[in-house]
Image (spheres, rainbow, N blue to C red):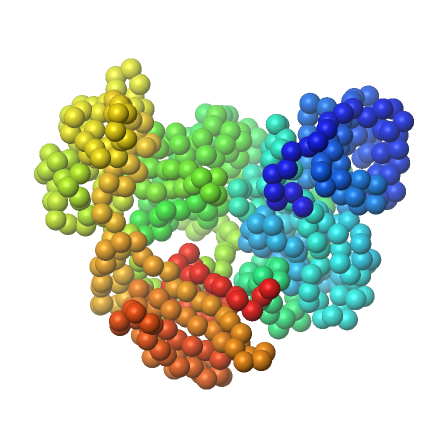
Length: 597
């Protein structure tokens, strides 16, 4: 609904009569809402504005604040709350709970919600009719992430075997309606740029309640849901798992009044000062860099670094809230660590997220830290993690860099070998050693580096437009990435004792399903040689696994490169097989389904 940027035709205040009419319409549309709930989203003593769009959509908001409601047809028949309204009153609408936080990645990408992506409570689906407004939540997070209209009733859904589209999404967190608000925000630390996971604070508050229930009921946890079966018609749906989805839980509800034990637990978590939280963040980061984060995992999104590596390193029973630190935001904290030279980060302009691209393992803070072995707290695992017994451990994929003529003088100045390959972090060490040797850190601003002639040429010679002035200084957080971009990129692939180094960035595995004669489907997979996979061996393996015919063919115009052709539409199962059994990193697999219109 709000995927394209369209300017409003008009913005005006509502009259008193129009405000009363809007309130009556909202009461009819949201029968669960109390008068207090409506007061929260439509305060009686403030001005309410309406923005009119060319598509007849009306957006109602509190003047000078946030949008609260939107009306798709302009007549009140399709009135919905925005996510901002739902964050004020989470139970304004009934909600579907996703199977796991990983499914939210597709919702935030604009996909509609399919029934295989919904966690079904033990008592079965709740009652609903087609055309009703419902919201979407993530397990363990009370804040809804999207709203939409049901496409069928619960009775029709059961007759259909819980297949097909459940909710036609009208608005979601991160769409243009959310982004249009000047005071846009996120309700808790479970919200990231491309995914929403459980809120640690909410999980901590409900821990006492969960512990008093039957332990078997507590196993609501996200047992390995294959994301590929969960979303839109653009993705294949595997209905075989539907019968097993009985371990889901109903939406988590916080009681209105907290028990004394919960209040005591919260007080224990709240006694940390801002300085202590900052210190704990640094300790958890260093512990994660020593134990969990490997150079081969880079680049890594900041949200993954936080949820999969930093949070598990916090002391047991401690809630780590970045918003209670002096940095307030994860991106600002990571950039501060980059300014100190411990790590290097850059912002992904497409995902609008900070990416970790390098670690300075010779940094004084890193070398002085003594990490400890500890049993990490369990965190939600995503489907790119493979079994210990699989052959994935035999495959290692690394991006490496070779000094070019641009940066050779820097390497020679610090007696580094110009003929060897370097990881990103090793290259960062070289340039920072040069900065230290030449004493180039700006005395009045320690976060910046003064560019002498040699360093300036290494970073910018040939890259600055003719007639433009060369920079005289650079921020530390940008130095490492700029330096690495001037080197020659290579990639190293190792499987067992076989190691291959090739020039350029690693190419992806391409999986494509297309329709052949009649309604028959054929799946093709290519790019296997990049990961040291033999096409003939894989074809034989897949023939047994999928019980179908397979063959291999040489790619036209690409000598020595082959593709495997598999009978049937096995696109998602094939991708999962390559990840689980051959260790191909998920980010290097591209999937295309040409049978979808």
